[in-house]
Length: 296
Image 1 (cartoon, rainbow, N blue to C red):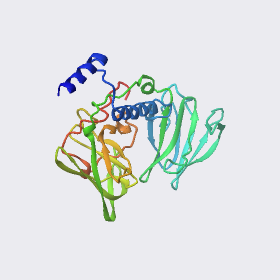
Image 2 (image 1 turned 90 degrees about the horizontal axis):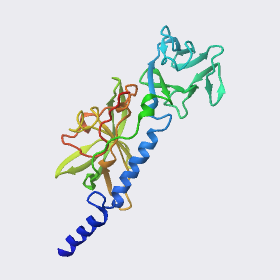
Image 3 (image 1 turned 30 degrees about the vertical axis):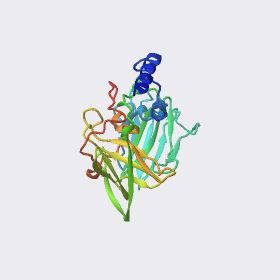
Image 4 (image 1 turned 180 degrees about the vertical axis):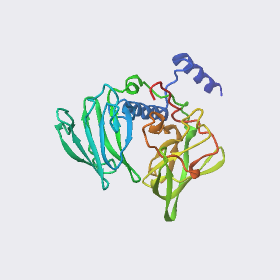
């Protein structure tokens, strides 16, 4: 025991109370967070999202003038750019003369647009703006991004809870005999249907919980809520990816890697919301905290 306290005392002398070297695990979580922040700082990240416009059937004029059906941010583009045409679930765009809109660095005048559910959505650009079609249920919209958005320019970091290895929780994936279809509500009021192949069973403080994750044993994704939502964390839930089993067949839910959904940064995202099966009646004091900014 004397040797133990002597070692701790020596560490405090050498590194100071708050500078004890990180363990490999803590370093791995910090690296995970750093990569996450760098990704959010990219010009086309969720922080660049500045608009979402639902299209009506037929013609939808767009530009920065208020008389348009789709009004882009003032000062960012010409007053009248062109029109989107929605007909029989197909969206095409016609660009006005003397307006330089590009696709893959090539000027375009008319083009059929692939939506975000395709492998390669059609992304159009004009100055710092870029946009593409999204499909949600039977609705089609234009998602607009600005690589010079105020939120992107002022963003530095996201606060996190202290990293604690206890929040890396061992779990068991129990496959259902038959996959089941579930309805996932979204932030825009729609419902998306997804297939669930099983459930994750785990314990926190000796209390047993379950999740119904999306994906399968080789890669699971959680949209979950807990009793920190609306206070320490974002009110409409959080996201977490769960790695496939390790070399010994064990699965871990690492809550230290929990992160905010896009809706925590912008009102123009269309995030899924936790189902009642994925709401935990306990506090998960791990991962990212809620994000606050004057620009969202």
